[in-house]
Image (cartoon, rainbow, N blue to C red):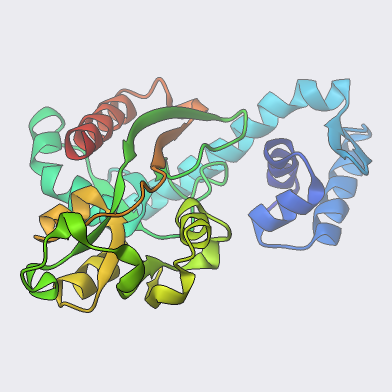
Length: 286
């Protein structure tokens, strides 16, 4: 991390505290680096108030150059990694949740190879969103709409959720006449806060029925397939696992956003990969 990178992080985040979080450092370190940069330039770039960090006219004029500088360093580092790995080409890095990577994108890789045979992909699955501003990924699939002027977001079809069980678990019972309040439920962990599924459980007084919690949708569907209970899971994933949808109140959908750093929007290879991701996700979810 250098002083110019810190300046860009403050611009992307809006506050010193969020910039510090994005850079995995302290607020005091961010402040010291801004002070050092301003002192070295002899200019005031950022005005810091209780409401956030605001760029001066000088700061606004220099910000595009600062972004170019950070991007050049990151491109240099990526090129060096490509050479070290022996490919000579930089991969297109995509970040998404594990089901999106393994169950939607991975099976469609042959389609991308047909239109862009020389593209190298780096697919990273994580429940923690990668920072495109810090170039931890080139594009990402996210379940909430991202913020930030440096990002371009394209909404894709929603992920439909439902309650699913195995035929063995149902044991001949009609899934249309199941009383969900009488069943053991397998549900998404609330580590991400008060998300839609957590609210749904609370609103329908179903929290006491939850016997298994997980951050992994695949874990929940696999447990349901083993006859452990009724899983609250994405419909596309549950149906692939051979599960049967049972009667339950409607569950709010999960939004899907395809996010790209604005500076990559004119890159031809990124455009091809972005269109492939959008088409693949749409085919899987619609």
